[in-house]
Image (spheres, rainbow, N blue to C red):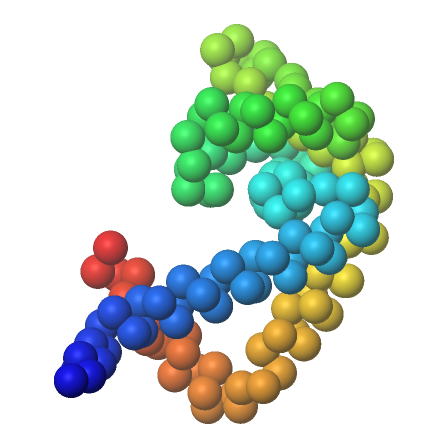
Length: 141
């Protein structure tokens, strides 16, 4: 006898599978530029004016030690730099170097086009519905 389909588990599996397939596609595209998705996430979230490391970790929904490791690798590549806040020496700002800014400017249009291509199978109405459903689900977490 066949087990009945559990809509919650099926939805959960589909959501996870979609997430991981998107992540893999993004990772493969970013490899062409020599960076990983978490590194790209830092480059996107760090403006030219810089952002405190603690705020960056919050923006990335991650802990400081994980983000610090990502920043260390980007710093070794010459893409970001650290600067202490002049008014509070405990605060460390992460800033893009000119090389980091140039890389972000090269990657961003390619990344956005790649994302648009992935979602092109959905109509505007389907996208709006998906957004509302994901917001509702995220609000419950």
